[in-house]
Amino acid sequence: MKLYNLKDHSEQVSFAQAVRQGLGRGQGLFFPQDLPKFSATEIEQLLQLNFVDRSAKILSAFIGDEISAEDVKRCVGNAFQFPAPVKSVESDIGTLELFHGPTLAFKDFGGRFMAQALVQVAKDNKITILTATSGDTGAAVAHAFYHLPNIRVVILYPNGKISPLQEKLFCTLGDNIHTIAIDGDFDACQALVKNAFDDQELKSAIGLNSANSINISRLMAQICYYFEAYAQLNAQQRKNLVISVPSGNFGDLTAGLLAKTMGLPIKRFIAATNANDTVPRYLETGVWEPHATVATLSNAMDVSQPNNWPRIEEIFKRENWALKSLSHGAVNDEVTKETMRELDSKGYLSEPHGAIAYRVLRDQLQAGEYGLFLGTAHPAKFREVVEETLKHKIDLPKELAQRADLPLLSHFMSADFAKLRQFLMALDW
Image (cartoon, rainbow, N blue to C red; front, side, top):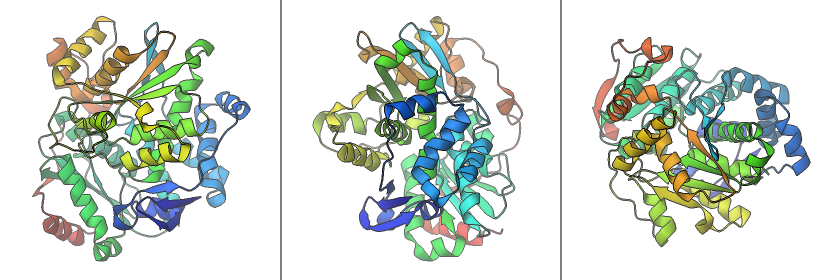
């Protein structure tokens, strides 16, 4: 598998290099040189397979012979040990529940596959994973890499801007997992990560890598659950399928669009955001004008400069699709709460991110279409806002209950790269 740097096409790397490196020169994202295509017959054959076997074939189509098919299947089997069920919400709308993994969020799929892939390609080299999180990435990455040999993880998150239970899920582990609460928003955390990757001496000294959705292995893993969703639908639902994706850093939507490039017959996607609506405004006006990030109930989407957007533009360019054809919408907190109550009245419990995806889908779904919205996190991860909005208690699943009373092990730091650099250089293995 060959990939190129979107900012410098002369930098071309293998899959193993891209997984180890994370980012290219000038903080450029890696993108596949060849986008594999499946025929309609091959798609039909894939849909007959189970989740793990199908996913291994999808990923091998990208990776090629760089990792054997047997090793890819083993990595997928170790990573995807939980389901991604489609649940019906209305006659013409369902939800793809992606929160049945160990950290109750969709990022378990990408995080766990990346961990397996990195162990596969790293050999005995020591690696420091540095990543920023707006909530769910941190937990998924921390649990995916917990106790793995020769790998240590440093996770930056905006202090006070993720839910208490999200924080408990990954800031109570210790061992090779180090967490830092940054005085700033997610974009400040992301900027620190990028500064670190621009520091060649630091990169070399600590074997720096990132597990954000900027890492191509995470993104590729996410392609697989779009096929899994499609496989669960009946023939009528598949005909005019519309998928609404709650979007922050836009990795999930990128993966869905890649599934479409491979031949999965999805009619259209909807990019659903909260008040941090840089992309919807850009699609309306053609002007890229990020505003200051604002805190919302859907904190994992509190991103005003989404890192994966260049990949989405590259897909549209490579496929000769019109960018204006990407459906979009933004939802404020009040409408988010109204929508959570509406879903609850229909017998479906949702948290803010899923509610936003549902709202935009419900508003834009056309006659004859079937809609799926992505449920990206378990409602219990946002217990405070869910209970306050719905006025009833929800039970904690065991994954959260067993960590809820543990002490936080986080460090606290200003958004100062010099301090972060000093911290990273002083870390012991």
